[in-house]
Length: 59
Image (cartoon, rainbow, N blue to C red; front, top):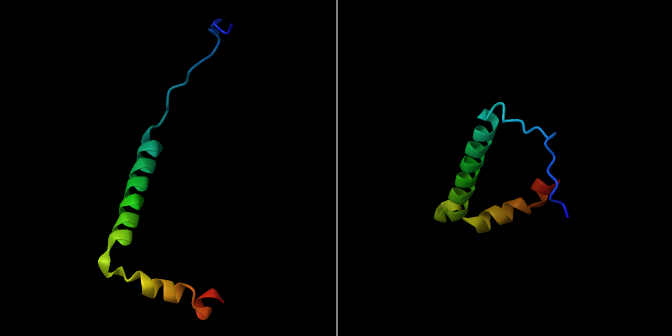
């Protein structure tokens, strides 16, 4: 039904792969940082929660 090919279409190559590579590197660094924070035993999440919901912080 849709087997008709359109030869008019142009496929443009990626002009600069630098931004894509930089985005992947930034994403990997961000994931690494978040993993490091989340798995750090000395981070003391109960104290973080205490201060995050403190009235002085929220106002």
